[in-house]
Length: 222
Length: 183
Ligand SMILES: [Zn+2]
Ligand SMILES: [Zn+2]
Image 1 (tube, rainbow over the protein chains, first blue to last red):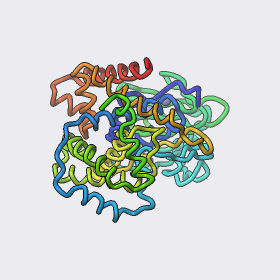
Image 2 (cartoon, rainbow over the protein chains, first blue to last red):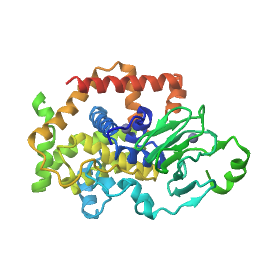
Image 3 (tube, each protein chain N blue to C red):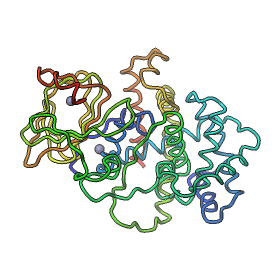
Image 4 (cartoon, rainbow over the protein chains, first blue to last red):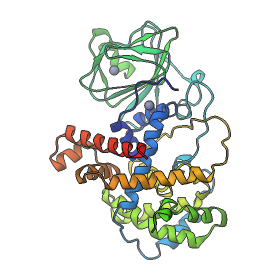
């Protein structure tokens, strides 16, 4: 996608590349990079920087016989699917459909495989399973509808997959990612001809400012 | 090492490992990378025994999965870094790291010599740019790679405000990218 205007920050990309970003956020990052050449090239540079750091790190002597132990280990390694991830930088086939491959892995398919749950006012969500240090969900917001007005306890990352939304800060179209922190208080509204589908991750429950959503929050795990 | 050798560092060895299953070439690669991997892991707070084990494991993956190394996409040290990072996430953090898919459609043409050279060249440019960073910036970038240390942990350890750490790292990355564009 060439008209992406809102990209990942250096903080987020560096945490992704060094392996300290929670799984939920990493899914948003991997999905955005699947769509965005700019961030992909930043990621490649940060991975290459990892290679530089390895080469420059002072050596720690290996114990004697470690090469033999390593080759022995290799023998008992399953030849076949050591997961793709284990082999580091390698090719991942491009997916057909709306969702890029990393997202399809978590959904178990494309858009038609999502198990939506209504959360009121036409908005639907599907929580995806990740490690518990952060959570990630798909959100379906009918055009014209708003997400409840809320502030954040931690960080929230929202990636638009289809349609667009507008909030107090800016307009976010397909491929754009918004990174919101504690200071931000916003009401995203889905705009444009098609309903908005987003992938949103957060590391803390959102705080809703209106009465009704606050009551519902414990039930819907927003 | 001369500059030219550095630019194509370890690609020939990887080729021999890939096509001939050449154990001597692998032994050279192991001698160079395993102690550095171990040092890298220990700097991140991993115990010596576990660092030794993970370093062996990473190199075992290099040997087993050598055919997945693609010199047009990454330098050897970058490829090894990504394997080590993924092992760390698996073993130490016990979590997953989703990988992006490729941007291009369809079967790709065989990477040619020029692509291979440029990935290796980029690496050596980056190495030079990194060595030219101000010491304080370079240290913060290295720490980010070593470890399970968040910015706020680095802040409490160094006494630097969080904002300073973030902006120093951002500045360093800007400089590195700038150095890459300039070439
Ligand atoms: Zn981007
Ligand atoms: Zn929000």
